[in-house]
Image 1: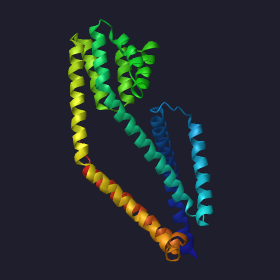
Image 2: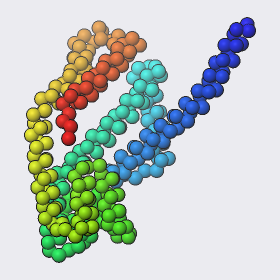
Image 3: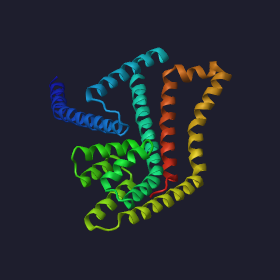
Image 4: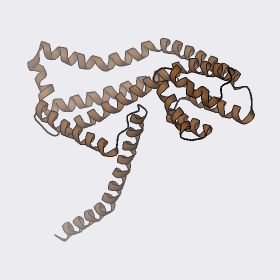
Length: 279
């Protein structure tokens, strides 16, 4: 009896020490991921309040519980479905951001050449950057419009360029900002520097396209390896649904599906890291 009381007291003391730290850690992680997701959405020019984001999370949780009950008849899969929904949102956001940044990189050389031409025509850097908004297409025109608005509200050019380049984490934009700031400080020929910068960016894009062509087989192999088990399971279900019913309807089958999904994800990440070319 006394040993039980002592053990209970020890567990209570351990929980009293651990639980507050876990609560603080969870709050920190929650605010970190909320801020990260909000910044990612702002890069698409989608501005949400934190309360709206939390409501979306609550709706996702309710949807996960409903899908778990309707599809599998149990509720313990709901956290897995919720994690899948959140992972899909993060993956889609990252994919769209990567595509947006890639389009901006392909638009930059021509826009930089237009900027150099405007400077040779006698325009100031501010006026030339403002003129580029109407001369370029999306998504770069949206970012240039934001830069133009920052200048119109009275923000200094160097600070506006710094904020702009930090908003879009592309090395080419950082080099462009550096070239403009150095030219403003030293008084050198900015138009010639911009021409050389545009030519360098264009050559870099050509080289990256060659590398992408050489690594295309490895990327295709990764997606084929990920899709093959799922497609095979669907084909076997169509051919012999009775034998595959235990995989889809039993708890053991759900555990197997979870393990296979985790291993497939690990394999996909591993192969993509192997074929990734470091800059």
